[in-house]
Image 1: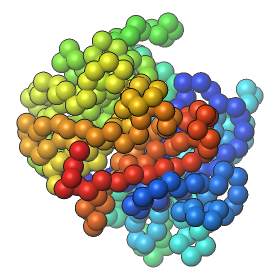
Image 2 (image 1 turned 45 degrees about the vertical axis):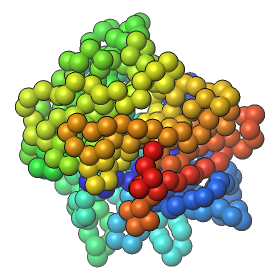
Image 3 (image 1 turned 90 degrees about the horizontal axis):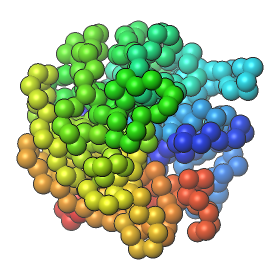
Image 4 (image 1 turned 45 degrees about the horizontal axis):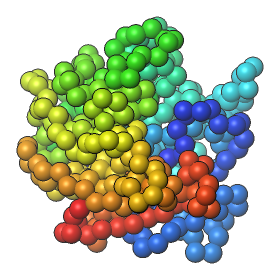
Length: 398
């Protein structure tokens, strides 16, 4: 499965100010870069030397592209497409109301146009699978992720299906099913080689909210569908004692070879990044957790996965944010049921960059890693401002 991801905006640990910001096109994520790419923060056209085009404004109180494991940008039929938020008004408390929609970037005019409405929840987050003329979108809410069953249907996680109309250059909604009745920080889906859909996320185990559960009280959860998303298995936590997480951690699922894998971050007792695999078909158990990149201050809630020829690549961020300590690291797992992990540091702590995304360029046989960084070195990278990219040959590996 070829998955295209983009750099995301800052996550919602702290609610940002209610002010419009441009949503930058990250078509550059499929472009091999040698140096820095500056995205003009407030102009309609890119500045000299920039790559890409600025998208429409949005009110970023809802952080529509916040989670690095999730994919929201894809290329199909000669154009870029994206899941975006269209604001339609404001609630009494000032929060925006709106819709989550599909937009198309016109390759002739570089203007985003509305193509289809996904649903009317402008605060939902999306993960997209683009498979030829078929589009699958997992949509979820993030307000509470303690594992308490939601009773309001507007808070349920949904799985949407769309088909592509080449003549009209748009997508037509087939419908949606309820995946589960939970909210979570990030939700990802992928399709295994046998057609089974798998989903993964981190969440609590049913504690009341508030107060938040203690560090390590959250678990890694998965579910699957054998009928193309029409029905879903009951969500189940991984039983491995190392499959723990905090409220700031995330998990992501990836299909590779004849298996699926889940990587998760843990900033508590099992500090670092872990990975477990499963056969493509449901049933049976997940393998014992593999040490993908474990150690003091290595775990953080930033990870992005890609697969190439059975190998798994992960761009991750650590909490080592000073000096020459590894901050952004590219991980690689060799193919097979019992693959081996290796790592290469892409950026060190003093660079203050964040939101790593890895993109495989199969034509050039390279792995590209992209991050968001500060305009000035002394600024906080979480504020964004510049997109940086580095690459490494796949033969070189990590």
